[in-house]
Length: 200
Image (cartoon, rainbow, N blue to C red):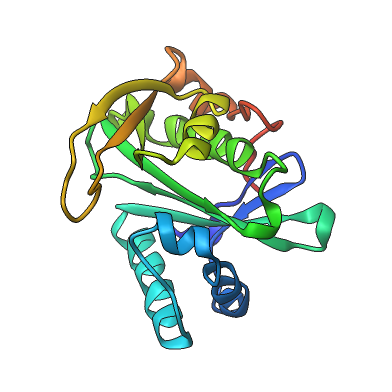
């Protein structure tokens, strides 16, 4: 899939592929204590930012990781977050991940953008067998629990501690594909919590 052809909207939010001119905003977003606490991947300098961008490009090229920069069109295209869908082609489940820039927290960015991403994923990959999207987070990250709920993900299970990924254990929330996902793919998909999720 060509990453340059996919953009989604959720109200004033525009989800688009990452660009190399986003690096200053990416570095500013990662210069945040909450990001350092909850995210395994860190982007402390320009060199790491370039490597991070390469990983996003390679994900699109392989069809295994679809990442979007989330920008706010009502605020001159301000970068407000990141969304990614990790999926093995042909698999019945995928995993979504996200972060929200500190300046945008409390504005409902994450659930609206996540709703758009999951609707797009179900519509796009229904014929390839996608039936469930999971959202995992570490214990204690109550904000991610609230985001999952608002975006239509329900609690699924407690994840036992894993030394590298979840030292304290975590939660898995899941959202199931709508029964009409194949039909939605033909007709176009609608956003869950932030208005229509449309291709541009």
